[in-house]
Length: 328
Ligand code: LMR
Image (cartoon, rainbow, N blue to C red; front, top):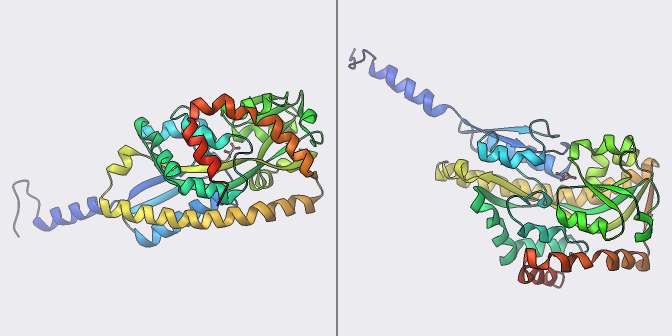
């Protein structure tokens, strides 16, 4: 048998190098929501597609419910290589770019179709690149849906929110939005919301129907106003170091799998925005308030001055492009 200088057979070297090549790349996907949510389902679909198409090359591990990292830490964790994929809400990128704050402006999008049009426009697509200077790569958007307000007391008009404490995501726009109606906003991690509501340390919060349902916020809030006052969508992100270090064919397959998983996630989001609302109504655990046209207009009038406050920060052109997405 032919031996090399180190005394290893050629066959041994070959099998060793094959074993090295065969070690799959671990891709940790960390998120904060439950598995029965649009993002939870998207992650599961992504893992399934990758297992089918990149078997032995890439292995996806999902960490839901903030098991591994909360959203305040996950972007840092991406940059440190502790996770490889995340999709925080667009409200959580303040340290990385100010531009994405446009998505938080209250009553900016008339409906999800308008949000979709803006995200797929040139301006929206350019925003995916706004995090690149910080070493992150925006791989795409994903929907959750429109936010609703919940509170210990019924919220019909802005004056009803006066003096109440609301949990918000870590966004200055959201802070300004609640200050505009005389309320006190508190930036708190998602994982703490249920307990804060249950113990009455805070009076209310804003979130989508699927988040209110999956995390049982409706069981500890007597009232939910169907306000559709703002958007909660996501950006799927990875780190440039990880992404650019992949073989081009692996990268292409991963992106394809992700795009397909997002299509499924968006479908789940659209369904859940109705079915989770209905499930909450049917539970009879809370009072779901539908606003009249006049009442909704009052919330709009009270919150819209926030746009002016942030137009120079997000950029007037960007704001104009987002507004324009409301018209087909
Ligand atoms: C929140 O913190 O309320 C949301 O960002 C949670 C999520 O990821 O949908």
